[in-house]
Amino acid sequence: MKILVATEKPFAPVAVDGIKEVIAASGNELVLLEKGTKADLINAVADAAGLIVRSDIVDKEVLDAAKELKVVVRAGAGYDNIDLAEATAHGVCVMNTPGQNSNAVAELVFGMLVMMIRNNYNGTAGTELKEKTLGIHAYGQVGRNVARIAKGFGMTVSALDPFVKDEDMIADGITPLHSVEELYKNNQYVSLHIPATPQTKKSVTKELIKLMPKNGVLINTARKEVIDEESLAEAFAERADFRYVADVKPDNAAELKEKYGDRIFYTPKKMGAQTAEANIKAGIAAAEQVVAHLKDGWNRFQVNK
Image (cartoon, one colour):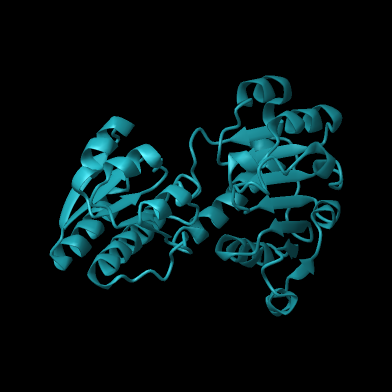
C-alpha cells in the first residue's frame, strides 16, 4: 500500500531517512511530497492508503480526492489543521503523535523568555528567572516539560488544567489553579499550551493580560488563534510594562512591531518543534503509527471518533 508523506514544511533529512526505513521494512511504498502546493497534495493523495503530514491542511477537498485513504497521522501534538468531522465522514482514522515534540517546544519557551527578560540582549540590565512565578495553561506533555525546566531555574510554578487531577500536579511540585483569572493574576509569566478549539479561540484577551503582575510576559507556543489579537494590541497600549513572545506570527505583527518594538518577539514560522531531535521522533512515530494501523487497525492515538 502507498503511504504519502506530504510536508509543505519538510522533515529534517535524517527524519526522512528514518521514515523511509520504517515504511520499507513494512513492505509498503513511500511517496514523498515536500514543499508542494495543495493541488500537488490532492493529486498525490488520490491512491494513498496512509498520509503523514505536519502543518499541511487536510480538509474536505483533500479527503474527497483520497479514495483509498484509511489513516492520517499528524506528526506532532496539535491537529487543528485536519478536519476531523470530514475525516470521520470519510471513514478515515486521524491520529497525532503526542509527546514527541514536547521537549523541543518547552525549551523554546525558555529560549524566548530569557531573551525577552534580558532586554533582547541589548546591553542593558535585565532580570533573572529564579524565584519568579510561572503559570502554565494546560498541563499536558508540553506543560509538564515546561514545569520541569522552570523548576531547574528555581521558579515557583503553578498550572491550570481541568483535565488533570490536583494530586497529580502536587506530586510534581506544581500548585494547581482552578480559574483562568487566578492563572494570570498570580503569575508574572504565563505560558500557553492550550489547543485551538471553539472554546479557546480568542480566549486570551486584554482583560486577562491586565491581571498579570508588573512586567508580565505572555509566552505563546500554542496556537495563534487562541489570542484575541485586537485585544492584544489594546493590552500593549494600556500596559507599557507588558511583553509578548510567540513562535507564531500574529496577523497584526507589523503594527505591533512598529508601535511596541522589542516588547514583542515572534518567529516567522511555527518553530516549537523545529529541532532535529523532534523531527526524528515525530516523523518516525508517525510512520510507525501509519504502518500499524494499515496492518491491524492500531489506533491508540486516534483523535476522531
